[in-house]
Length: 326
Picture 1 (tube, rainbow, N blue to C red):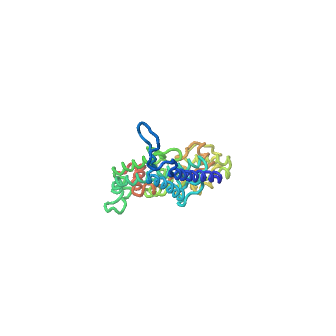
Picture 2 (picture 1 turned 90 degrees about the vertical axis):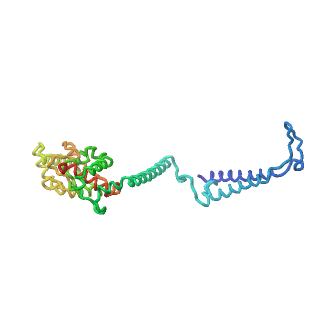
Picture 3 (picture 1 turned 45 degrees about the vertical axis):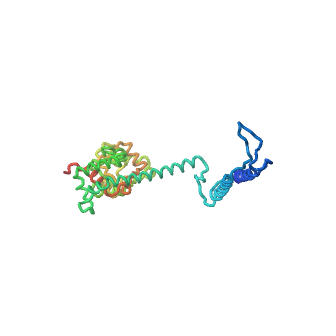
């Protein structure tokens, strides 16, 4: 609020209070020229008007409201830019535009939803937490059951399937067969390894893939040549001359994918010889991967699910690619 409007509001507020005080003083003085209690000479429907002032308690009540209003204005906002001795604010006073107001309201609503969600999780844990613990822990209640052991428990697998549907299916599909950019979890083509504990580590801590873009280094011709060679590794028919040139350029890719193109789980570098392509196996898709790179992200679920649920979920995911386990 500008200084002018601050002064304007202050004058109006204090002027109104002063005017009310003057009105009370004026009305409590007898100006009728008639003694208190005498007949005023007025008659209305048989009712005579007497000169009776306001009751004193009523006048005191008016004065009390004025004193209260002054005390309120000293402690709380009401006099222009003066925020009061308590510094209380009824709203976001630093907001200068509708956009800022909407942004702050959105943040407040988000915080409210987060708090509500946290309370719902706590309530759900009281109801279902014990069931998760029985499935995830040994009889002693201290050590977790091996993932392979949980994977043989049909009840645990049903629970794992529900956890998967609620948390993983949005990316990997309800059947866990994945889609472009999200791996198929039912085959043996694991980027970081398909061992039970490796799957659990992926769920706990997440993964961040980083396939660099090679266009600036190789040029468009080099991208096409390396793509031809990469496709040839899985037995695809390609131009042999382009593949031969691509093999020479592939030396920069071998650091992650290996000289034989079979990949490296330590880096999450996929096997290029199995004809399984995370972002599509067409020539155009492979060229685009080499040209622009890929940055895949698998989020960490430890904070969201906790180790007990992840132990069960890991067993379900491991069983997807090991259906023969009895």
